[in-house]
Image (cartoon, rainbow, N blue to C red; front, top):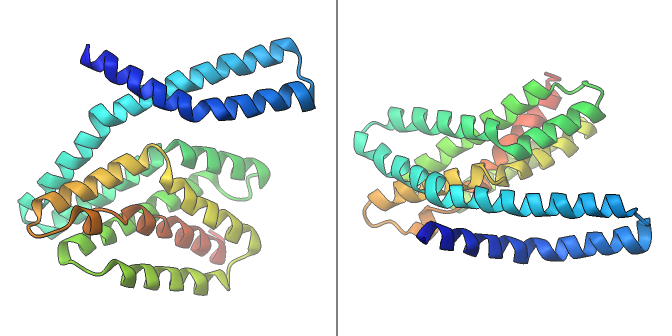
Length: 233
């Protein structure tokens, strides 16, 4: 009963968010495009499927992914090994990013538009490596209590300097690559991991130390794709 009630609550949230988009697209189909009745019916059916899909996904996030990330984050510092924390954080972030649907969509579109000039597999690897590397930096920042503003300043200064030497096509892709780190698979795990680590460190604020990880993690793919373009990998 509790799970059923939670699902209906999530479904209501999703429908409230999705309905305005459905209404606008439906209006455009009828008034501007002049879509046929079967096309409109197909769109409405797909909208229903998307709504239920998002609802099940968000239920999975609340029931599994967030608790898993928090428990892993809380357990890592207990081992007392910085090397172990670094390795575990790197591989967890790397694999989660590879599984991120937004990364798959971006790399598929880039591969199609570029005529396979930009390697899809190489792009996925660079994005995942960039996220993983900066996630390690983020976790070490939490442990050693380094100010977030210094890391953001240094990171984006490096991004700006690197952008001066990047071919235009890679420059455009790199910033979109930074955006895919805010996808539905990556965000819950990364945030929960940071909050879990913060929770077991005494005298730390969950608001100031547990957040900011997504912002730092997004620098990794931007720099990675830029370097990919500079060296024409």
